[in-house]
Image 1 (spheres, rainbow, N blue to C red):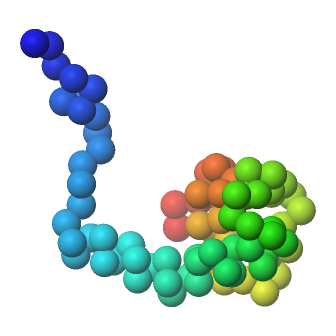
Image 2 (tube, rainbow, N blue to C red):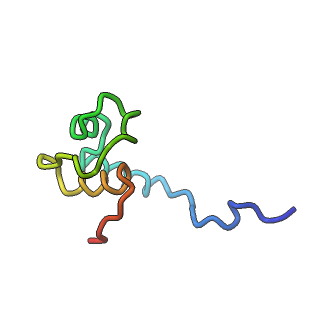
Length: 81
């Protein structure tokens, strides 16, 4: 039997501590469904695909929330710092 995709994938499962760190960062940035829907003026998270990055009013959000929105919802690059 040949090698599968998973044998070559650069993805690996994190430890419980790593997952807790990510969850904490998301909470600290208020990157949650309620805040995302309010900020992006969405009725439901299923509408997130219709978001236009140029029309997001992020004036009242943290830099962390803005970076996560660009990265995960707008699928844009964010500066490393």
